[in-house]
Length: 162
Image (tube, rainbow, N blue to C red; front, side, top):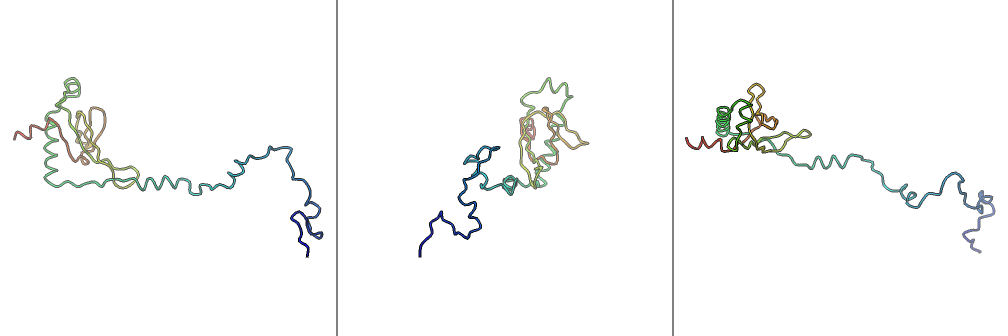
């Protein structure tokens, strides 16, 4: 039996009439580069945004710690000291000194998921608003009183004297 070569085609083949024609080349389009041709077969992002969701899930948050009664009482005393030491806004801005600076540590809830982060802000208290239950700092930031877990500064040395 004689083996047929690759180029030879069975005489009864339905493609006999086109098998030996030259490869067609478009007159309207440039040939595709090897890079673009390979890109057709590269994987695509079927799960667009999935990587971001994974990163968001992996991002750690803290749970809000509930203060015990002694800690709450201590914070109340510190808030009273701040109220007693507070002056009018104009006077405070002119007379603010380093001794008036405090560090406030509070819980800031996360906007996207359960939990949050503890933030410490250093500055001068401008006002404590009892209606809105917020502490307003001289830089304009507003700290909810219920989220405050600690305050420290020279202004609280009065507590140590008692």
